[in-house]
Image 1 (cartoon, rainbow, N blue to C red):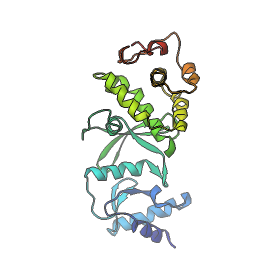
Image 2 (cartoon, one colour):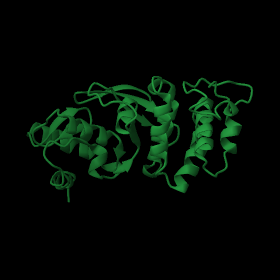
Image 3 (spheres, rainbow, N blue to C red):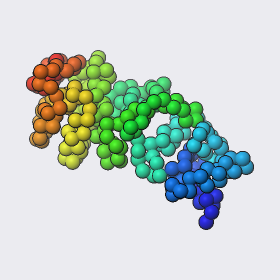
Image 4 (cartoon, one colour):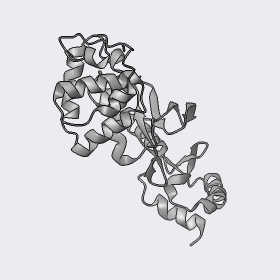
Length: 240
């Protein structure tokens, strides 16, 4: 089967208008140059459309919200493997921590990637993830991103914010709880202090020494929650 035939076979699996990049086709790395030439010919013949560099679609392209999600999804996967996830205000909205708004910017977290770039009609901000991204770790990384931004999104209602976080964390498995603590050490010390205070408040029985080692016992970390909402915050270095 030729590269062109492989691409055509791949296209039969995609709904019309679905964006795709080279990585989604499932070709070997050494087939990249041939795939690029094949796609160039298919663009010239009108079989596919080029949305931007390295991003194509078959059939009509719609800039509706679901198509935006398809573009983002294509950026978050490479060769069918997860390499990034949505973060920022859109993540907070999906978790129910802030109100949903259509104008929130698109932010994706990917290991060792930073900067603004464009894909099709979208402007996207890439921020470096704390650790390499794997599918199983994404709930943990999303929670830690939310904790890192707690003082901003929970400033007006910190007690409600803590309650919302408790509800989200209540469904974590024991393995995910352990991963949460292990991964937190790659985040700012203030995030570790907040996580330690929350876990203590919720009464999880687990080893929190990695969080203790990460924070400076002589430092005080900003926290918008009052002592009434986070009574053990001071013990974790938070200025509640």
